[in-house]
Image (tube, rainbow, N blue to C red; front, side, top):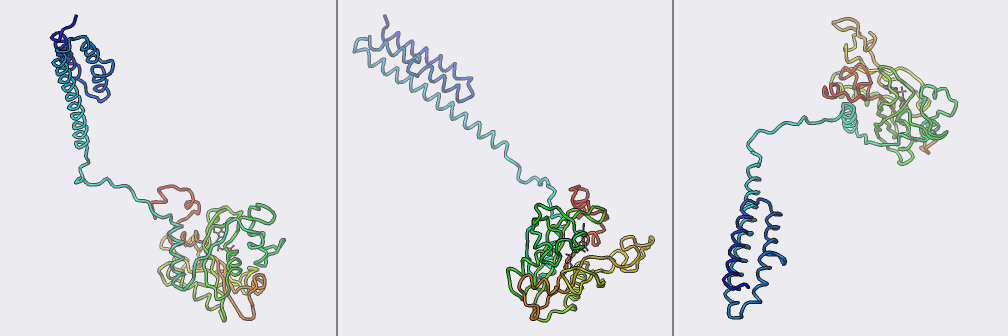
Length: 349
Ligand code: FA5
């Protein structure tokens, strides 16, 4: 039969056992499990306490006091152990702290694709002359792409701009000229816009891609003349190439302009001489001139399609290939380099 002394002795023994058990533990879960093993409802200390009821009442206070002391000691040990764990974790964190005085490791910064750079630069140059940016869809109606630009079905001009027909009436646009139509439908003159964007054609060789970028220009106002068109393009070429290169206009046929002209600029490689120190200039095929786009005065037929009074207004328009401009300026000799994503090419510009 238990006595007060034997219970207290047992409690002291448990206290020692607990101290030995917990000493090597180093994770919270194990410490809490040890605590439960001794102080939990079915823990060893609780089991001993059940003996308390069988003691004569006079002896109970002294045992009760021992129980409280030992429970307190166990709880204190647990709290100290957990606090120690937290302190160690914090010290380990601090030891890992980055040394902010070390020099940074450089990450190669990205930059805009050459075509994007060229597009933004072209927009800036035209903006200086008062041209705003307009946009239109790449999947475009046949009407905006051809019909409204005076290229009816079966017109031979369509042969040079074959494309993907989504339906009979919806195509991948072959040029940015449909943005002329959309702009004139949406706003009244005076108009001065440029429309850069991607276009599609059935073309494929070193200077022609099935997908490429054009920048369209359109100005409609009273009294605009061909000389205004010429001045705008001359200004653009000189600003873009940062040299006093000349432009020339060769009469040409585009159904939506009258008169129409191909725009040539002096070859930026040979400076217009047709020859390089190393031999004949292959870029301009020794002619000294390179074609950069089409242009002309807006045909009254087009004005009629969009309800602009051709008695009152005149307009000029142009469309240039941005890949071609970038090739001339940066010496790119195959149009496919733009689209292949080869880092050796991308990092050059
Ligand atoms: C046109 O696309 C007319 N819309 C331009 C125009 C606008 C004329 C306004 C009159 C008034 P063209 O088919 O010539 O014209 O194309 C214009 C330019 O786009 C060409 O000079 C060339 O620089 C570029 N280009 C044409 N096809 C390709 C291609 N497959 N790949 C890369 N660039 C091309």
